[in-house]
Amino acid sequence: MRHLFTFGDLVLDVVATASSALEADTDTPGDVRSAPGGSAANFAVWTRRLGSPVCFATRVGDDLLGRALVDDMRREGVEVHAAVDPVYPTAVLVLFSDGVQRHMMVPRGANHFFGPGDLPEERIRTAGWLHATGYAFFWDSTREALQRALAVAREAGVPVSFDPSSAGFIRRHGLDLPEGIRVLMPNRDEARALTGCADVKDAARELARRADLVAVKLGPEGALLARAGQLTYVPPVAPSAPAVDGTGAGDAWGAALIDGLRRGLDPYRAALRANRLGAEVVTRVGARPALSPEIMRQLEVERDA
Image 1 (cartoon, rainbow, N blue to C red):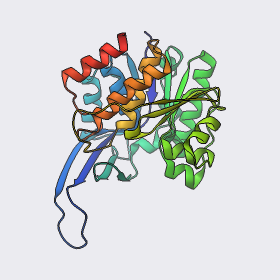
Image 2 (cartoon, rainbow, N blue to C red):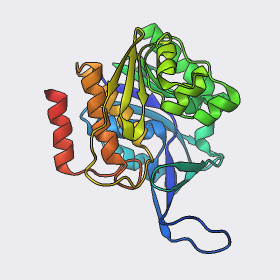
Image 3 (cartoon, helix red, strand yellow):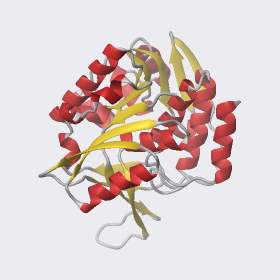
Image 4 (cartoon, helix red, strand yellow):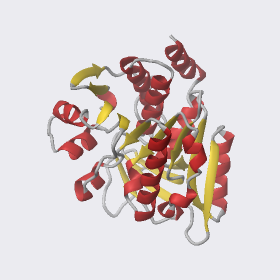
């Protein structure tokens, strides 16, 4: 199988999880942990853990954190192309979680200056798939990199998946979906923001005009597929433990979906497998938690069935 190529943020996630309701001017019990993150980076790691080769391009600061995050990706088996920014530091993302919803603070970092010159274009041309995220629309430099990556992929006939990534950004600024998307993977809020449709089914049908396959992530309710105007509901898979942190679950879900499709699974079976992985990721803190050998074996069984 040819490698999947993706690019984008490589950051340190600092995750604060409250164990009770927040109260003003006093202490709130909870837990604070840090772990590697970044939407495209998470997607890359989960793709590799699922057994597919992957190439990832990013931009980090000239600092210990950046080197540590790149080394961590390489230990996962990901081929990393990391440009080093001489001015801005490696990004840190602060997330507050109540176990289901997340609130994020994103300081300016080296990742905001990833540009077309940071793309290893030959690795795009020789890829079997390109995955891109909507976070690339946030900044001028990253937007130019996205446009260039899509152009190279289009010229080389490389299929593209796209995750819109941020309903808030879409509502504030709008988002022109790239042309030629093979698989579009919004969550419920992003699908509504992209279309203006209140009903997620109507939103999925509308988005199916812009992509070969639309896969709407519904969190604990499963997923909704839209293809050529036809809708298919994919039920959730029960997790092995209660949900504690939603960070990175959508990235893991998307990686499992694309991995399954590339291996020949039909969209329903690929999405059902993605539901299993997403359901397990939320039972642990962090975007790339270690899962039990039993869960990973089950994902392999479903992949090869």
